[in-house]
Structure formats: C-alpha cells, structure tokens
Amino acid sequence: MSVEDGFKDLYGYAPEGVWAAPGRVNLIGEYTDFNDGFVMPLALPHTAVAAVSRRTDGQVRVHSADTGQGVVQLGVDTLEPLADTGWAAYPAGVVWALRAAGHPVTGADIHLASTVPTGAGLSSSAALEVVTALALNDLYGLGLTAPELAVLAQRAENAFVGVPCGVMDQMASACCTEGHALYLDTRDLAVRQVPFDLAAEGLTLLVVDTRVKHALGDGAYAERRAGCEAGARALGVRTLREVEYVQLSDALRRLGDETVRSYVRHVVSDNHRVQRTIALLDAGDVRAVGPVLSEGHASLRDDLAVSCPELDLVVAAATAAGALGARMTGGGFGGSAIVLAEAADADTVTKAVGEAFAAAGYTAPRVFPAVPSAGARRVA
Ligand code: ADP
Ligand code: MG
Image (tube, rainbow, N blue to C red; front, side, top):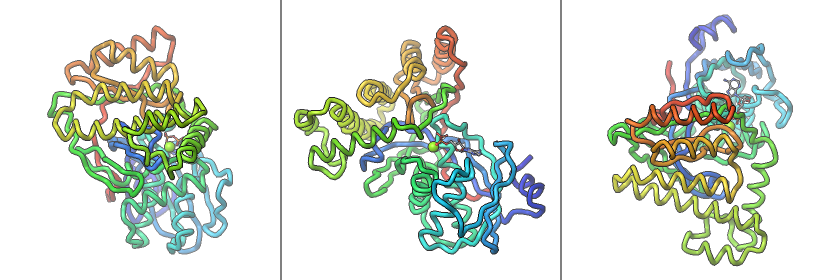
C-alpha cells in the first residue's frame, strides 16, 4: 500500500502532501563531525516517506507502517525531551525542536514508511527526522533552508531523543544530490557537491550490512566524544579540527594519555583522508580512493576501537577478493561497511564476503550498491 493510501486508511482523509528523505553512507571522514571536521556522505536510494497534514488543535499523531505499533498521539505543548516515547521521539522531537526555535507548528498527522534498514549504520533515524522537518517546513511555510532543517533535526536527536550524534547524517539526508557525494565542512556547514559517477568509471561502491545491530546509545560513542574533547583541551584548541595534519606528530608528543592520543591520531588523520579523497576525485583518480578507505578502516579499528569482528571480516574478505578498498561506515560496533571495487568484480567480492561470513558462522550479510541519490524532497 502506498504511504498516501496508508494515511487515508489510518486518519480517514487525504494527506496534504508526501515527502521523502534518504538514508546515507559515508564515503570517508568518520567520527570527525563532532570535531568540526570534514565528512563525505552520499545519499542512498532508500528513503523514509511521510504523508503529512497540518493540525490546528495542538495534537501530533504519528504512525509508522514498519513498527506494528498503533498511532502515537502527543500534545505539542507537553512534548518532553528524553521522555520514553520510543520511535515516535524522532518525529515528535522535530516538532519540539521547531517550536523551541519559535516556529509556529500547531500540530500534524504523520504516517510514514521507510526502506532504510534500521540500526544498520545507514541513518534511518536522520531520514525520519529530516522527512518530518521538510514536510512541516513546507506545510507551515517556515522558509527554512536544507542546512537549517538538518541542524534542527540534529537538535531533535541530541536533545529530545537523547543521542549525542554529530550533524553529518541530517546534512546528508537534507542536502545530498543525485550523482554526487557531499563534501561537508561541519565547522560552518559549507558544502560542495562532488560528482561521484562510479558507473562511468567502471566501478561500484557496495554497502555490506553486517546485520549486527549497532547501538550508538551506549556509552562508547559518548566516551569517544569525551576523549576527543579532552584531546582538544590538552592541545589548547577549540576542536581537533584546528590540528593540521602536518602538526600531528608534534601534537601526539604533547599528549600523555594513550587513549586520547589514539583518538586524536584517528580524527586528524581521517580529516586528512577526506582531503586526500577530494584531491583524488578532483584529479579523476577514483581507483586510488580504495587504499584511502582501507587506511581509514585500520584507523577506526586500531586507534578509535569502534569496529567489530564482522566489519573487520568484510574488509579483509573483500580486499582479499580483489576490492580496491573497504571500510566500516557510520558509528561502527556493527552496522555497515562499504567496499570500492571494479564493477566487474562486484559478484566475486560479494560472494567472497558471503562465504567468509558463512565460514565464521555469522548471519548472511545484505549487500547492495550505493547509488548516489537525491536528498530530501517533496514527492506528492
Ligand atoms: P540508524 O540511524 O543507523 O538506522 P539509529 O539507532 O540511530 O540507527 O536509529 C534507529 C531507530 O530509528 C529505530 O530504533 C527506530 O526507533 C527509529 N526508526 C528508524 N526507521 C523507522 C521506521 N521506519 N519506523 C519507526 N521507527 C524507525
Ligand atoms: Mg541514526
């Protein structure tokens, strides 16, 4: 059933419109966004689609076709950050963030369905937030830009849901364009759309969902964040973004704490890997991005310690089968990896990863190509 028909069945009238917002994979630049650093995500063809209407009575009703739960109804005046509202906290948090910023949102009926795998490191949460934000922006004529909506969506996730994520996921979902990767400077949200037509190069970027559910809510993410902040303080900079790559060995010498040192090494070197990737793409040397991805994985695995055996196995099996490079993408501890490979090798690589998982006794991974797709938009 279409999301529009689902809305009619549920609420008994036709929605005012339908919006879509995608999930994403991040090509390079991981755990850099909360350090004011660089990232380079691309939007997936998988989207959260929401049918939405305004309400004037201060009520918000939300429903997801994917949860098997009933309609959740909340009053806009009584929305409480960190109240345990389950999945509804994502769209409700956006209503809360918009109202907290002074926007006159007086209620909504929302019915949504998503093809973004949840908890797979592909930002199903940002897709929910951004689709809600864009729909309300359009319906209420708020006139907010895509980056402004992304920042509000991030605030919803940080303050209302209670997940201390950076701004990459929401910016990717809101601002990506078809056929491009989004080069994003998270310090000032400057963006550049970088042409990323792998098919024309005879290449493919595979997403391998390990089916291991990541749980960013646990303390590991916050611990990395705190470690990076401690590193910045010890170095006398506002954020680790201020540390240039050429200053890295000096900076490391000045840090006493071994854990903080390895976090700093990851962040500064991954920012540099984003710069190297941009330079390679600008020069048309796309194949050379492969080893940069693999270096990034080693850094996330060894310095930041956010990988897991399944992600490491994807990278090892894919590269052994001839892939140009691979790395975990997103927060880690499960979720997904990306693999850059010759298009002609896609089947071989996919098979090799599947066999390695079977041999290790892991659940079969889900593999699909990352086709750079459009960001959030109105669809009806
Ligand atoms: P990720 O963003 O990597 O997929 P998160 O843990 O950040 O993982 O977000 C996943 C959560 O987002 C789910 O547990 C659920 O609460 C919510 N969510 C995502 N997609 C949907 C959906 N289609 N319907 C209801 N809730 C969803
Ligand atoms: Mg998320």
